[in-house]
Amino acid sequence: MDRTILHFDLDTFFVSVERKNNPLLNGKPVLVGGVGDRGVVAACSYETRGYGVHSGMPMKMARNLCPEAVVIRGEAGVYSKESKNVTEIIRESVPVFEKASIDEFYADLSGMDKFFNCQLMASELRQRIKRETGLPISYGLSVNKLVSKVATGEAKPDNEKRIIQGEEKAFLAPMPVQKIPMVGDKTSQLLYNLGIKYVKTIQDMPMEMMGKVLGKNGIVLWNKANGRDDSPIIPFHERKSISNERTFGKDTGDVHRMREMIRAMAENLAYQLRTGNKLTSCISVKIRYSDFNTFSRQLKIPYTSADHILIPQVERLFDQLYNRRMMVRLVGVNFSDLVTGNYQINLFDDSEERLNLYQAMDYIRNRYGTDKRGNSILSWGTTLGIPNIASMGNPFNGEPPIIPAHRNA
Ligand SMILES: [Mg+2]
Image (cartoon, rainbow, N blue to C red):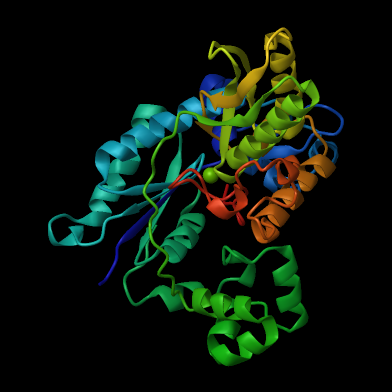
């Protein structure tokens, strides 16, 4: 069946939110990110691009490249609220949609062209989002997610682009290879070394040759270069909290064991948050004693999904809660008040190295996540029998992967 897929992306989202709240920033170069010495750029306005600034680079370097830029420390809670407003408008307007990141959405309009003009509908929806939220947004419309995403990138800023069915290949042909969403620095370097600079060159190669050169990824890349992508829209569902609890086989008074257990649970839950592109702002710990009396204690914190922030807080809550006079039957950890957000935006003041470490560890968990017994190999939970999470895939159905591989503004 022919499909009609709409892709929305808010333009320089964090910057736009800051400008909405402070119009004096309009037209000025703006950097959002870590203001500390080791912080990284989470978002940058178009005015900074000419200086070679891009998101993910150390803030120090960005400041050197563009000294006149206004630097703002972002707030995940503010961005999440704005993202939610946009989500609600889209939810009201289309039958099925996927929230691909805090500022990016796909909607499946397949079959609707019989009844509506999909392009007109998309344009009206874009105008409504702009009117009601005050945030610039762009869209791409085509037969699949890939081509629509690329079309959005071409439409930006604050515009729209439709690729007529059958034009996908011609649309992509003149573009540099790194415009294909899966092509990062490494792959594009590899392709450059092979003399492949433009998508057209890949289109003109036999699929088998790409497979020989790049393996399985080569085949995927060849299909994308040719504008083929049958990946489905994953419907968005909200989840307000995640939790984990464990009843001991035999009631215990072993504090060390209990602390290890809640530590492992916190670590697993934090990983789930990152996998689902979620942040929490409320953590709670529960203890059930052998007499079945149950106590819990909770704490509000700034939005995060970082182990090194969450685990010590969970341990502190446990220490405050635990009454040593009785044996314990069950312990549990719960993260609630969840919002959508990339964990990078709350690690502003962490160094690039720490961000890279999180990404690398989560990558390994995703890839090699389980041992023979189905436990996560990179977790405290391994030895403690905490249910494996790596094999569960994304716990937030409809939520995106940890880091968008190839972000538009
Ligand atoms: Mg964006």
